[in-house]
Length: 181
Image (cartoon, rainbow, N blue to C red):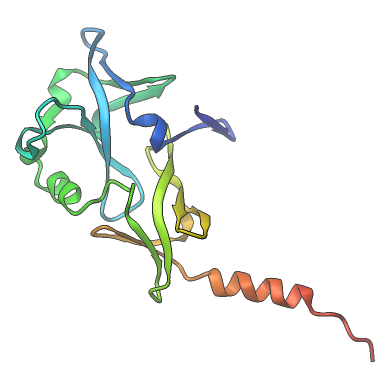
């Protein structure tokens, strides 16, 4: 299921995983998406991890987001087979992957350290591959967080701006009765 947001197609991570990958050059299916890797500096997809029968990390193959031509229906289109590279050959991508920068399961905390929950899903813009929103869940709470609120992405952790206090204060002030002189 893809969402339409002002003309842009927004796709949940949970719907990207498992999508078939086709290369345009020979018009052939080359595999499916096993996972996504997030850039460490910004909320954007850096690479798609191909599903592999070999569980060895040294054998994992990826496709850089720069080689993705498009996302449609249930397909991911890439330029050609030369777009497929071993994860170990691109140090930056390997570092992101080893640091747990896949989004799902990453802890979400505020800048002052308040735990919000863990990432359960996130929405990806099909054109820019930017993360638009993340869904954080804890035992008692669920929260949708805009990518604008993301302060920093670290090893196994997403830090968001601390707007919880501000939002709670606004609600408190709205509930106060108005007293006339």
